[in-house]
Amino acid sequence: KQEVTQIPAALSVPEGENLVLNCSFTDSAIYNLQWFRQDPGKGLTSLLLIQSSQREQTSGRLNASLDKSSGRSTLYIAASQPGDSATYLCAVRHALSGYSTLTFGKGTMLLVSP
Amino acid sequence: EAQVTQNPRYLITVTGKKLTVTCSQNMNHEYMSWYRQDPGLGLRQIYYSMNVEVTDKGDVPEGYKVSRKEKRNFPLILESPSPNQTSLYFCASSFRDTPINSPLHFGNGTRLTVT
Image 1: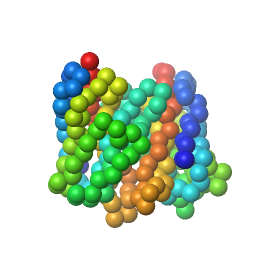
Image 2: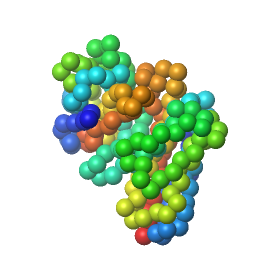
Image 3: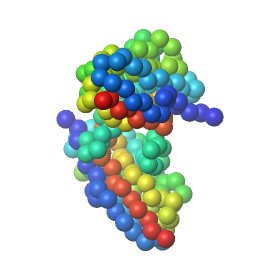
Image 4: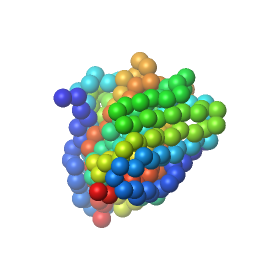
């Protein structure tokens, strides 16, 4: 059974720092990995999607990497800002019963202080 | 604006009183799904649909029903709600033709309390 783990569960940094969020998964047979952001009381917003054949994706100050063979992904946030404060979730899409499904990690709660 | 719309945002009900949470998307997505989010347990899939009239169980389907009569709508039905179904519910959708590489779009959530 696919399991997704995110470390750390919570992270507090001062504004301007570069930071790395970690995501690991137990079964490397995935189709893709997606990083989401969730603000309190809101839904999830897709940040980056990395296909299984890719090594990384970049969007602005965000860079996500994928090492499928070792079951790991990292989300790098450069020059963090208070507006980056949110919970970040990773999810892997993998095969299940002839279709595909998404399994989520429990998230990393990030607080960026001014 | 492309979006997934859930209603209501908040719902308080009593045990056993049937309720429906609606979900609608305007992106012509084939794939739709329901999740519940609970502290310490993360997001768990309840049901999903690959297309009209095609639905299947996720990880935690007990106590829930869904239907997919139209492409844009995917309501979640609780026939006899119980307190353990108190949770934050999310609807999501994506394209199916290449579902493995189509980002998932989420609604803003429905916070349900069953007393």
